Amino acid sequence: MKSFTSVKQLGDLQKAFEAAKYVKEHPFADQALGKNKTLLLVFFNNSLRTRLSTQKAGLNLGMNVIVLDVNQGAWKLETERGVIMDGDKSEHLLEAIPVMGCYSDLIGVRSFARFESKEDDYNEVILNQFIKYSGKPVFSMEAATRHPLQTFADMITIEEHKKKARPKVVMTWAPHPKALPQAVPNSFAEGLNMTDYEFVIANPEGYDLAPEFVGNAKVTHDQDEALEGADFVYAKNWAAYEGENYGKVINKDMGWTVTKEKMALTDHAFFMHCLPVRRNMIVSDDVIESPQSLVIPEAANRVVSAQTVLKMLLQSL
Ligand code: CP
Image (tube, rainbow, N blue to C red; front, side, top):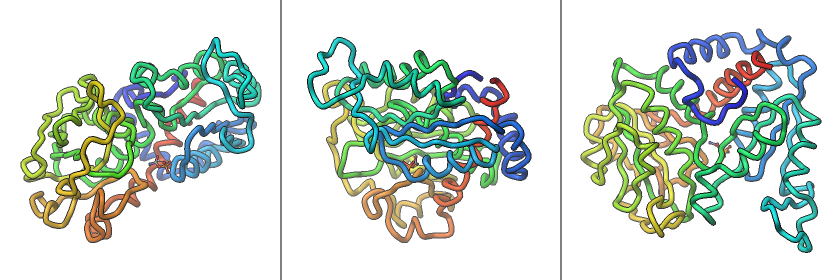
């Protein structure tokens, strides 16, 4: 594996789950793999889980870890070619990326959708520049369209908790005050399409995701119908994808908040969310605090997913 930008690159899912199980049970078994190797984590956006879990994964593998917050302490970066750089941006990404490559063996990049251009976002302009110009294997720590390390952790968590071979998994949109990227729901849908689980996406009209991510999922605009008999409820907000509403908040209907009453429609479902979560917008206090809530095990599995992927990348060096 020369880069990791999508859960599809995990290949055989059962083998990936076995690899993750080994990593979880033997976190320090592969320290020789990372000895004298440097992991650089580059953040264009804020993070708690991804920052800490990926650092811990690198340390577990014996790596040296460097974290760069591009917007705090580094030179302000220009990302467009052809710009006359007479403003406040002192360095161009096209020099900065190969310089970062000189100092590292693997590079993780977090760069969210900017919602300025759907074409630029869905072409993953920033992430692909790292892949093209760094000279090093690059992995996504959430890019414009996908969050594969989150999805892998979510899928490991479902695998660990499912009570039947083909659980019903419902990903439901829920309200949020700000426009959030589609990376997490896109990626989760991409991952669930790799399984034979029953997979339903529930969202209000105007919030359908890109068809290439929806895949074979059943899409409904009726949340209550979707939740009937669900085994897992994966809540997430995302901004509109379609047409001129791309990147906009067009609905804040609190009737979509995941409450105790909504969970009562399910088959004693587990509640999932990638965090951070806005309580009593996305999910009520009692649901997220209930024994059926998997938000902390999901976050814990972020170390497992990152370490499994870093191990694969190190084995390919
Ligand atoms: N779920 C997730 O990626 O969390 P952070 O944004 O805190 O990294």
